[in-house]
Image (tube, rainbow, N blue to C red; front, side, top):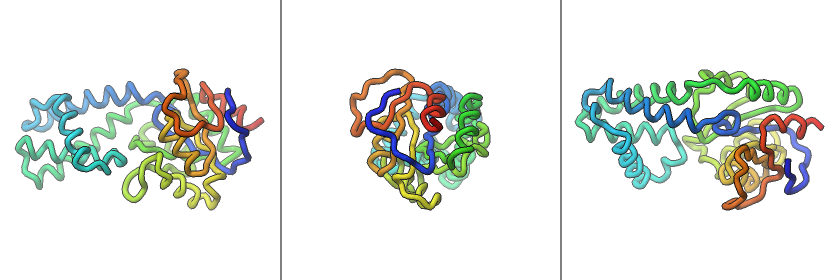
Length: 237
């Protein structure tokens, strides 16, 4: 545990989800592979679609509409519609099929269990503070067993810009009827979590499980920890 500044009193705890409470990288990697197989097998027009082609179309869509990068769900649906139309599916069908395919992707990317240690930690912390989640991702919290672990979960998209923008932190404070400065945010990412929280006025705990350097940090975290379970002793001492 490393302190970069004194930890001030706070009234609520917020968590990032992906790569903070669970290891998301292998999950997403497998989901992307399985999703291409799903598209190949369920839509004859997409039987020859490759992961490389998907990546090219994804980059093209985001270059055209950079705002989609902050809304991962809408971004994927838009890419799906674009690919389906290009590969010969009628637009009216592509609109419907893209929604169906997206639901399958959510199932695939949420096909895992949150570690028991994380679930126990959330339960213990909730005995002391309101515990919420603030995420740029789109995991199905019910499928992974987190739906009843938070007071609420805020996801980027729609009118709420993704972290590191301050929208999600402001919305969280408004819902809790507190100031943003009353929030202690825990996350793994130096920009979206640490900078996002600190720049919004909240305090930030950086979960640095892989001993990454501070290279690229825009603001220092309040505290750096290397294991999520360290939080309980930090917060309840």
